[in-house]
Length: 290
Image 1 (cartoon, rainbow, N blue to C red):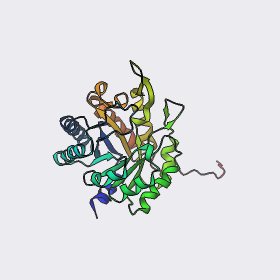
Image 2: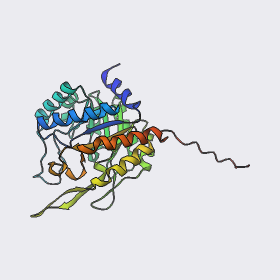
Image 3: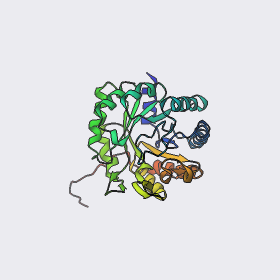
């Protein structure tokens, strides 16, 4: 069995859920190593299967002046060092087909951003790396779309695919998490992940001094969405975590404070262990008689 399939099977059977987590973007090598150490310590203590996440490039920014990260070559070197130093799998995202081969040499999971979830060429290029593919559902998509996106990966010869809910656009500056999607996305016949931080973005909802806008967010509701997702029975949780979210260069309003991570995960593990959300309720509609 190859390493990707082995990891995929470990994630599928992880109880009560697996965790994809890390800072939104690579800020520096020192910061990434610092975050990886703390995240591994916490997840090891709680017995959670953990994959470290950070982006080498944030291509989809509200403003051209926004911080994007170190870029492909330098970013992959840093992620490779995290992998070697702490012996953890890596997930990072791609934006163009040409990036997939290089990313596949380092990352264990290649993530497809929500805006690109239907881009066939990108899905096929990612699939051909043989790595696990995590496809985020577009904010503009019905959950049924993800069945088609997952099938594109499988038809390219890769059975190791996951789908991820990250909210649905509701008006111009808001996202809504519909818990029904966690159930409906299971029709893609693969693990379902809940992105509990991006789901609380307010796209272009924060006005900046001197003009312009940036993404806002509702960090205080992260526990609410996380509790819901785990109770419903998702297979994995995706969350962005930062030791200093007020000074994070990207998506600060929706990054969870590192100091509160263990406390939140402890609660989620408890919910996950008592919930029967992963089991379909068998409804008996025959007439009830005493």
